[in-house]
Structures are given as structure tokens and as C-alpha cells.
Length: 286
Image (cartoon, rainbow, N blue to C red):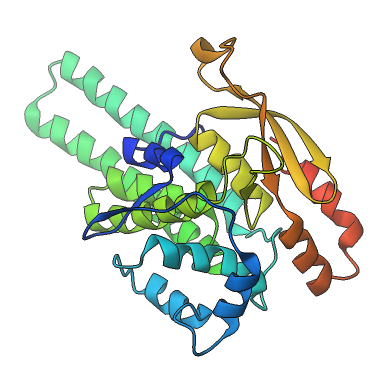
């Protein structure tokens, strides 16, 4: 996964903070009551009934509260189509296209600078720049299309959400960028509000192993090793991405994630695939 640089607001999630359009509201850091979430998201009379939350989410409602995001995120585990190991066929293609697009943008800028040094006539300079920029725009649109299709396959594909946020910002489509930034921010807020990750008594809860790696990269860590601990904890050993931070005595050696519910739900929905879970977990280690 590409190294991720998220805004300062995103990093405030460490303190369990999330933001609505009208006001800032802290989401208390506490273990999620998964049984309550299960009941509420399956109850048509509940304000947290899952189809209601999906409608709010899909219409880009920025009044959707951090609490509603918590039910939306963890409630996904109790829906019929839930699969914690779901992968979209579009993800690898999107990753590849993003790398190509970034290279194209760098090439465009370097070409433009070189032409300026040669004192190219302004008209020709603009024609060359527009030609390269148009090609880059086509690539960006293709990446966006693939990322959107990946999210249709898996609404919790955080990497595709991040790509959309970044690309829309690059393209100056600020409203679209804000929508995806808001979604990503609040989903990560649901995760970090579930614990501290420091030990098995205060783990972070996730609905997919991929989210463990994404979150840790957002927080500035590379995952160096993985260990599964019974009855259902992932322990990810880490090192700071920034080499200047390495060796600090205050840095954690790793973080704990509670994946008991994803494992249980996967076993219920895919009873013949239980033995493959450990392999799937290990494959996610980059």
C-alpha cells in the first residue's frame, strides 16, 4: 500500500475525535457493545436499523453522527453479505493506475519546467502543458472509475476511499473530496474509539484485517510482523515509517486488534472455509 499522508484532522482521531458538519463532537473511547449493535441494526424499528444507516451514508449526509457511523461500521458484520476477507477485482488495477498517474504528473511538471528553461514561446508552452495535463486527467478519471467500482463491491474499502479523497483534491473537486474525507475520517473514528490497541484488554475492533494495516499506516507505522493470539486477536508488530522516530523508548512495539466477531461471522457464513482464515490473515502482511 502506498505511504499515506493524512491531514492533521485525521490524526486527531487518536484522541477519539470526529467531526460533523455543524459541530465537533467527541466519540467516547469505549469497547463497542456488539450485541447491542447487532440487535439495533437488525431491528426495523430502531433508529440504527442498518438500511436506514446505509441510506444516510449513500446520500452523503454530513449530519450523520459519529455514533451512527459506529453502528454503520460495526453493524456491517451482521449483514447478510458480510465477508471480512472481501477483495474487489478493481483494487489491484486501481493501485497500478495510481502509480502511473503519479508518475505522469511528475513527468508533466518536470517537462514544463524544462520547457520554461529553454525559453519556449508562451503559446507553445501552454499547448504542450495542456496536452500532457489532458492525458493525466484521463488517467485520473480511470482511477476514480475503478475506485468507485471497488467501493460498490466493498463499501469499506478504505484504500479506495483514500484514493478518491486524494484524487478529487488534486483535481480541485473540493466537494467530492470533502465527502470522501468525511466518510473515511468517521470510519477510522469508529475504529480508534473502540479501544487503545495497547493490550488485549483494550484492543481496537475492526471488521476486516485490511483495516488494521490501513489504520497503522495512517498513524505512521510500518507493520513488521504478525501474530494471531487465541481466541481471536491480531497482534501487529510495528516500526515508525519515519526513521527519525525509530529507537524512541516511548514507542509501542505493536498493537492488538480484536477479530473474534469477524472470525465467528465468517465461519457462520462460510462454514467450509474456516481453515483458510489464518492463511488470509498472513497474506495481508505487506
